[in-house]
Image (cartoon, rainbow, N blue to C red):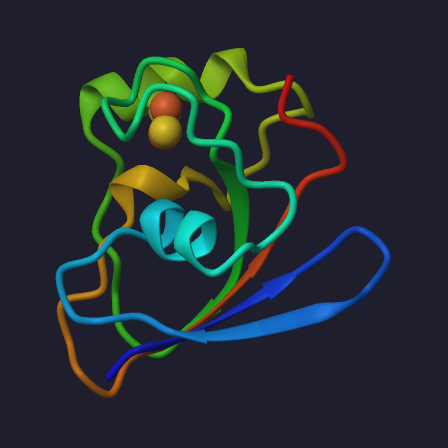
Length: 106
Ligand code: FES
């Protein structure tokens, strides 16, 4: 099962096993990971699930046009590794990801 480590702004790490096909946003919300809001439920229209992807063992693909557009509306500055966690879905069972949670989502 894919494993995702969410790093909080204070450095606290929260490691979660994420079933293949489940988004990083849904996995965070259902595992009480702080700082991932997911206000729109995963429709890529709120940008409250912003994360910075620090490391991945499996390519994630490029953001879609809609995701790319919403990444311009994040509460903390967009960086080259910014993604909407609702659009990041591990598809490989042995994938390991590390993402950094931003200081704010709204
Ligand atoms: S949950 Fe709204 S953009 Fe990701």
